[in-house]
Length: 110
Image (cartoon, rainbow, N blue to C red):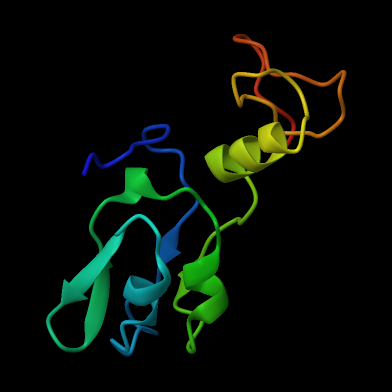
């Protein structure tokens, strides 16, 4: 299977290793295999650029070791494009029909 990449070095995902207890919940809920075990105590971010910022890891982390601005970036763009917002390219970060991305201006949600 091809590992999809989104935008390089823009994901808002962060891991506080001091808080991580190594339960592996983030590994189980992540749809893009962003995490792996780093020994028995902690997980590590294996592929930061594969994160689509869905927020499942942070929502399910029992110790709040993970933070991510869920609903921004590629995940929001894909979901909103499926809801009919913006252009057919999936670049829209808003479901408002007149608000689209341009190459020289970042979307307001990103």
